Image (tube, rainbow, N blue to C red; front, top):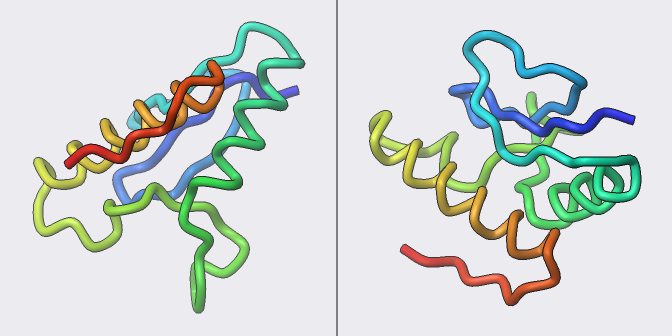
Length: 95
């Protein structure tokens, strides 16, 4: 099972066994059980694409970010929420 979740600058989320050049990590799972939990968390908490992005998962806040700093802030916030969810901690969407 793919054990790395990563995002592209567009906000598109993908899963794989390696982190491609240019992609930013969201989460890494140590084993198949944790990988399933990671994928479940991301599928629940990510934005589900519509229109041309239909069927794709997106990091909330990145597609509409006005600059790279705002996009990085959105990715950091999403990373924290996914980490908390994977570790059965409360989810807090901080600004």
